[in-house]
Image (cartoon, rainbow, N blue to C red; front, side):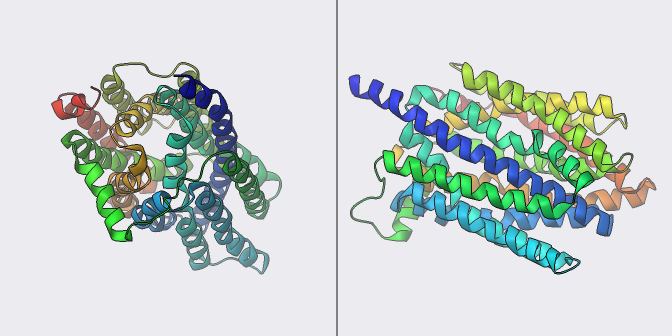
Length: 413
């Protein structure tokens, strides 16, 4: 008992330092994502090209999640975080150099985004597993509330900051700021690394054997398998909203309004993330999971119905406000059903499988929106609106089905 209390007191401060670094990094990444998205849209006027940019920023990291998860269990997790965070800045630096030399071509933006994504793949499994290293089971829910808030900062703070910077300067300044944030996150990881034990085993088992053990940890319980499959569907519908929200708003407004809409809507996640960071969820995790997703689906569907900035801000707020309850519950159900020594490789598999839904969304939703827009005669705005609405309804349906699956409920026990 005494050892647990000491660990709790000491390590939560280290977690907060690590979290602060990722919070800043998320804002910097959000600035670049917003700026490059508008850069592509202004060049092409196409939802397809915007979704391709999102796909290239996501797919390399996804494909490398599983081996990165194995590395997180074989080597120093904090060192991997430093390497991943530091080198991912190379892609942003490449884009900046191209822009300083003249007009940056589409393929250069795509290449730089891909490079950044490749190195970022080292970060996520190591970061997720490090939280398990630092904290006790009782702290997971509170910590996940803060992690959700850090992740949401790219949607809350970045759009309005980027909108202002684009108005007074340009995208080059945004890229410079993002590059600077990488240094802060590396320093935070280095400080935390000095204070906790290296997780790397003295004798390292074969790489593919480690990977096999990670897969076994994921498939050991049927409820986990069902939860991961459902998560993939959830990511599919949420990915549609993530990509098409911007061209939908831009179809009847400007970049300044878009920044205000994104920040206002995403502030819903900030409110509930702070609440969960203070209180956490103590019971009924499965109920919080499916109810949070159902409310998010309703917010998403109604977001695509109106062209009034005030109304879509309200429904966007609802969408984001419900997400932390679902994310918090999902994290708890998974984390408490996987042994600590297998966390890195297991999260690698979990992330890979569940986020395949994002790949499908990023690959198809842009083409779908453009096609529907042409068929209805309403352009990319109408196509995005219809696609977002249908995806929101589908998310509600999936959440209601999840509420009836017994194997998922058994994970809470």
